Length: 69
Image (cartoon, rainbow, N blue to C red; front, side):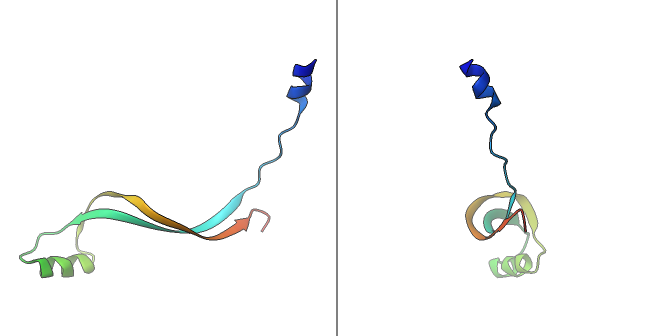
């Protein structure tokens, strides 16, 4: 009988929450150049090649919104 009562107990309904987060990742990129300065300029202008996805190294919760609006 105690088992039946336990099964009938309702779990509270879950709510949906939305968040805006700032996430910083460390990624590896490469570029071919004659000097380090040239390589830095090429990477800064977006001309590098993405080597692999990075690891999340920092995150900060900015805002939290209730699913109700």
